[in-house]
Amino acid sequence: MQKDKQQISDVLKEYITVMNDKALLPVTFVTVSEYLFLLKEAACALRPMGSNAILFLAAAVSDFYLPEAKMVCFFNSLKQSGL
Image 1 (cartoon, rainbow, N blue to C red):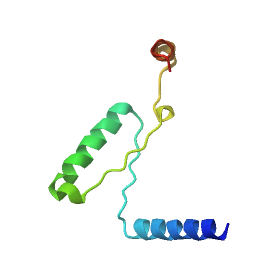
Image 2: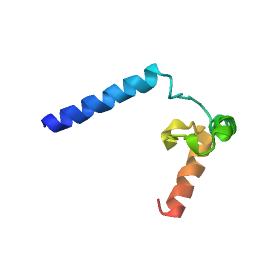
Image 3: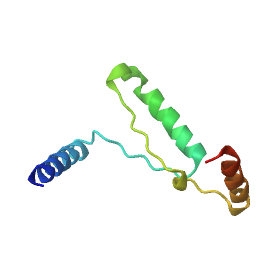
C-alpha cells in the first residue's frame, strides 16, 4: 500500500512539473472534423522536431456528438459489424 502511495505521489509531482513547464498542451475539440484539423496542424507544427516530438491522442466515441437522426444508423452499423 505504501509503495502505491509513493508511486502516485511521484506521478503527481511529474504531472505538476510538466504542467508548470508548459510541456503539455491539452487541446479540446467538439467535432470529428475539428479534431482531425487540430491533429493535422499539430503534426505539421511538430514536423521540424522530427523524432524528438510526440503526440498523445485520447478521445472516446462519447466525445463526439451524433445527431439523433444519425444515431439509429450508427447503432445499426455497429450491430451489423458484430460490435
